[in-house]
Length: 181
Image 1 (cartoon, rainbow, N blue to C red):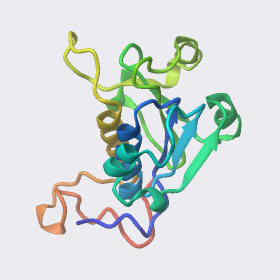
Image 2 (image 1 turned 90 degrees about the vertical axis):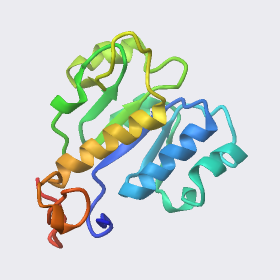
Image 3 (image 1 turned 135 degrees about the vertical axis):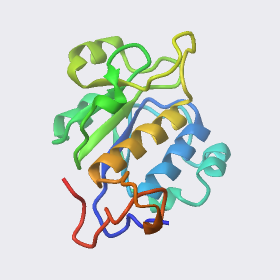
Image 4 (image 1 turned 60 degrees about the horizontal axis):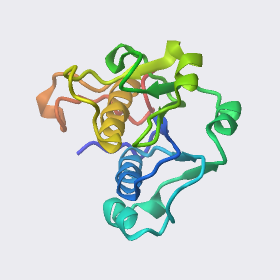
């Protein structure tokens, strides 16, 4: 197993008005695994101590750095990295993006996604995860995992072909000096 602990967080994961406690729990677990902060924007429709959030996130909730903002615009005004907006409706492929440390992956609510006006203002950083055309969407926690680990792969230079170096061909990309940029 590759340890990401000695190096800075690759990206922030931002949830705009999340609705389903188990999804937030699962995404918090992803954040714990990669050392990413979890940013929650807008009103939560459930209590953080909801049993289903706890069950999906196991005991990782307290290990995750969390930020709370009353709305996305408040977060956006203070964020210094690139915000990448994930959508099923618009954007180029996730695999065409070039992630850098400090970027944010922004996901909308489970029932509505991101607001169309937000996507319209940020067309140049709107992304989608490629999938078969007549399928509506991935679960937001699955989408967050795919996008977060693609960002980790890019930021830390993972994906080499040295099968003996530990991990799934990750080589020695996670050297003590930190991430490769």
